[in-house]
Length: 325
Image (cartoon, rainbow, N blue to C red; front, side, top):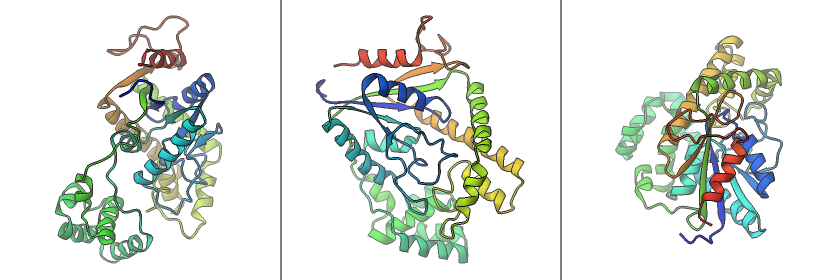
């Protein structure tokens, strides 16, 4: 890659790790524009539970929660946002925790049909009548490879796989096997990840943040969404962590205390999955923090030794300065 290619910064990390604060600090220091890489922040009305930032980001509030937003949609939108930012002489900084979106952006995502609401509704009606194992059987008839990878009760994945075949006549597994074209291979990409060195600290932050969301009115936000007749728990927006559990409480399926505990547990599981992705991520510069949000010096193998005045911002800037220019 030519070293005079435009710079593209990617800042990743698990939920509640401090990504947004670091991204804002970098944006102010380097004259960057932020591009959100988050599957919940794209939806209007999901504000409190998604920790929607007030600092300007591209790709926030761009979809109604009744709509389906795919990784392919995100790649197309991110391409346009990044090209626009660079055309104005500024640096794009992509920040978020939806690792599938980052993978699609940096490694490529095979083109496949977009969402088809009519076909999806048809599949949902079949599932309501016969159950999701029946949909799994239907998928196995046309795409046995995809069916072998999807649990018979995983409604969202089953629906999407069968929808792809019915709308295109091509099995999802075949779409996935086609060559992918990275969206940003013409840029000089620097990848950063921020995370507490101690998993217990991350869990404490998750619990504290959810308590703050509840105090800020998250339950009422979910209640308002639930009043809409076109929204249901099967939609990706409503299945977002926190929203799904409180929706179940409002449906009378569990107490509020149980819903809160379930939401915190689901958020911890989300963070665990994000870290699993990140541990396998190539060319990643890690920024480990302690319980105060400052650098955790030597806490894990490969962690840089921090000087007394070292901060996550300073280390991130050092990584950027060290990258080829």
